[in-house]
Length: 251
Image (cartoon, rainbow, N blue to C red; front, side, top):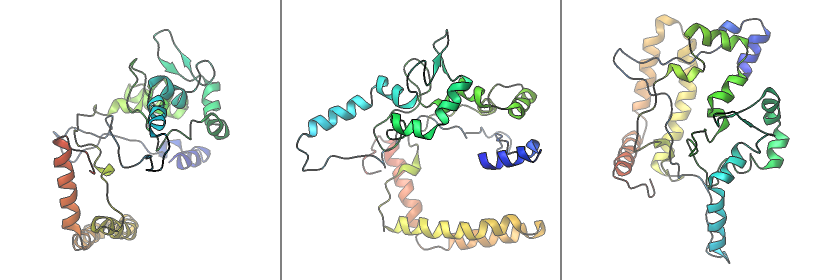
């Protein structure tokens, strides 16, 4: 998306850029495109049975998950990687925006090493600042160019997310984190479905508008005929039910 926007800007067509809007199927539906804070358990690390000091490993993970450490991993050092205003809000100056784009710096500091797959927080710190800089409005404001600001001014907003409704509580969220065993019927169905989508989506989009409905119907019929569809749907139905009841183990 960023590459596309850059290309359009260089071509003098910034008004052709993608614009996210809270579009829904019909009036009365509340958009829910923004994601709430979520617990994700289908990736991470584990302790082997041969670990000599498993308690030390747990202590290390516990240290990683503390706000002080998470702030270093996500934001870096105050005054160097980010700044703080009089209200205690974190932000990036123009120089810090450029600094945080330096992949070598991020790798060397440890930001990229600990950003995924390790125990980490999600959402906001206890002081209200976003855990991830990219989710902080003050950071987003500094990265907008003149064309972005033109769109924002036209809508009377400061950030693009203001167009969308706040996320409601979803006790099962995110369903995509369900543990699907490799080689299982669900995994095989997901692979077949992905192949079908890759084949049909370009065909549907590029077809003559007069043929859209027939192309879409063909895709839907083939999708519904795939082996394992019912098993796949049942798996996620049971996953959602279990999570709503508070059981996230193996789900």
